[in-house]
Length: 120
Length: 107
Image (tube, rainbow over all chains, first blue to last red; front, side):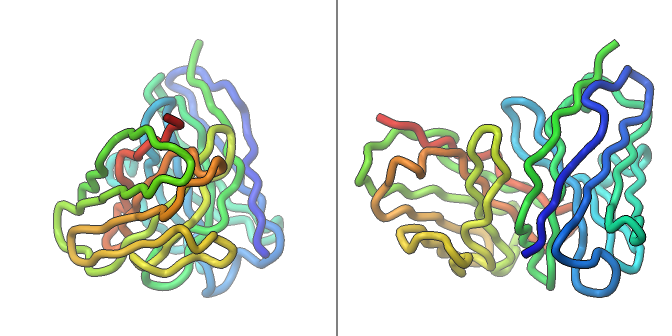
């Protein structure tokens, strides 16, 4: 059973870059099985899909964030990462990671999430 | 982007009640529709995938139906552990999008 754990700084200053890592156990992040996605949820708001990376390194990004976003793989550590530049208070949220397989893009399981606050 | 609209946004119900949540897509998504349960401080949990398939380990009181643009999540007999927020999600086109959520509260 795949398990995921998000990690990274809980506080980021405005205009800086938010960087998070999702560590995967129970399966390899490389190869042709999974897409690995990032999500976020601001307080009191709905979930938002940020983007994903395939085991081969191909990425799909939410156009609303694409200009500031990079998602990358580190197969040696079995991790994938999120980098979001030029952050503002609107980027304050709980960030989650989760895998999907196949055509229908359901996500299971999810990491526990990590709160990132953008504040000076 | 495909917009997902859930209704109601919140509801109050009692243990044992039958609860129905609806999700409407702004364009047809065939059956590329998934449902999640989310409790505060916890990871979202997949309940239903491809509109009507019960995820392994999810109680049979949960069911999903629908196709094209209109979908329903039903809880046949609400249990104390079911009080949570429920989200639909379309998997048809990127960007993948979620409904606004339905918060199920205790009456």
